[in-house]
Length: 153
Image (cartoon, rainbow, N blue to C red):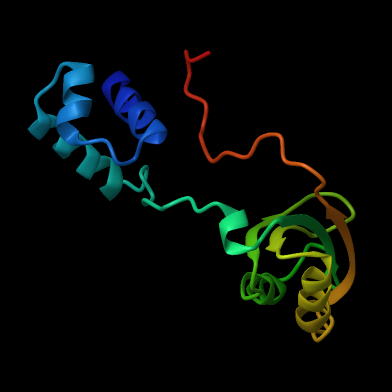
C-alpha cells in the first residue's frame, strides 16, 4: 500500500521530477535520507516507473497528432500486431480496446503527408491489419501524464 507520506512525495515529484530530496523533505517535514529511502522503495516496487524529459513536439517538427483506430484480422487483436504497431516511428501510445476496433494508437507526425506515408509504409505492408480509421487532432486542449491523487482538487 501507499501511505500518506508516499502520496505526498509522489504528488510533489509528479509536479517536478527534478526536485531535490532535501526540498521534498522540507515540504513534508522529514529528513532527506528518509525521503531518499522512500523514493528508492517506490522505484523498487515499480510505483515510480522512470523519469523522462518532455520535449515540445513542435521543436521536433512533430506538430500533427492523430489517433488511429485499428481493426486486426483477429477479432481481439494479436500480440504480433501490437509488436508491429510498437515499431512504427511516431507511435506514442497503443491501447488494446473494447468495441469494434482492436487498438487505439496515438501518433505524431510532421504533417498529414508524412502521417499518410508512415501509415501506408508500415500498416499497408502487413497482412495483420484489416482496417484503420484515422482522426487528426485540430487542437490539443490538455495533454498530461499526471495522475489524480485522492483528496486533491
